[in-house]
Image 1 (cartoon, rainbow, N blue to C red):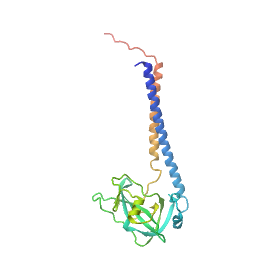
Image 2: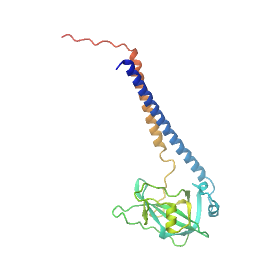
Image 3: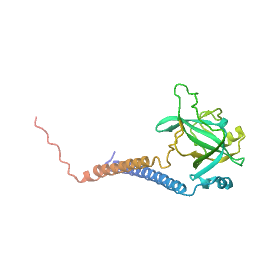
Image 4: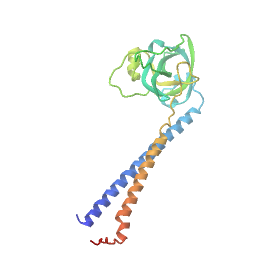
Length: 245
């Protein structure tokens, strides 16, 4: 291979690698910016006045109320409580406890994510005992999308322990007129329920770390290319002295 062709191939490879690493670094920065913007929007929603139950029932598009604090009153539909499996809190696996709440003086029902409980690792089917009052209850919380979904092997799930909870399917299964949102219940923990819900900006530092790595790799490619393909061309190469026999 001629030196000119070798130089051209190395230059093309360096440019392609540099373009790819810079693009990946910028993409990681954009992901971090998106999460920071989302977190800022959530914080802005949190600072708005608390949503009253009458306002919740009168709002057709619940997306406008997401992440706002809310005050609810109604009755638990305890027999329809679902335990969402493989949820983590404080790096420990367990369940999210989800119970429908029948709103007072209304037919509407909303899912309340009441908290997290640890799982019994000796008996996977064992359910923790959750105190669910039978009378009228007041629930303070934060408006949220329906429970997040994880990868599941089964298309349709039933029973109290499930990987995911599809809102439409659960409404058809139970006959409950579920609202198109859920509520993260807040307030002090209620043994055994814990309520240290994850924050929306989790993972921003990871994106900045990945961006730093990609930009660092781009800088390394640039330095190596400049040194071996440009600088060394202008350094005189002295022939090795042959040792006398």
